[in-house]
Length: 202
Image (cartoon, rainbow, N blue to C red; front, side):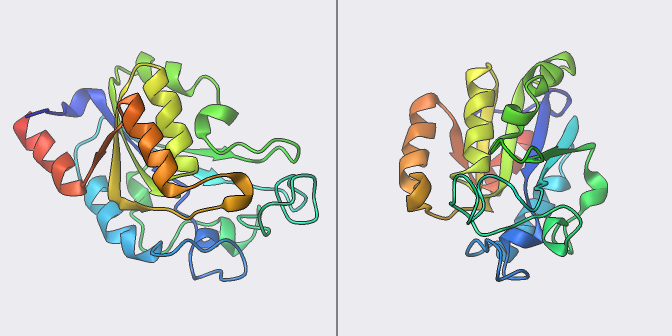
């Protein structure tokens, strides 16, 4: 049985914001987003060495928004609006740090690693060797962060029942396709129960 060691394992909670849920239906609601909150909170209760969270933190004229350069997404998670805030009920007090991304109007940063290029090195300097990833959306911001961390040498676990995804044909982002890519890279697609059991085994 593969085990996880608390002192060398971190959790990355990706973009669990109101703008990605039915709480803000005019933004970019992802199906099932509110239903994963209890599963994320179950992960947050585990003894990780550190817990990092990300927030999409967009200016109103972000390049990815409809009517702007890339013209893909409706405006969402705009700085200073309810959509940018974390979902109520999420145990944010457990976060070690919050990393904003997407704040450059001309740069679309799906992954925290794209906006904060030293993130992987920071985790390594903190003694982290394994990262559990969860949040929104499984095949977009979660996937790109998981991919970059895997390529940087981490043992990456994607907690599927603590995440939810959405196909975005305009951007070529499909749940099945990115899962296949992740598996090919060696990302472990697991459940919260499997993460919990891996800790018990350790």
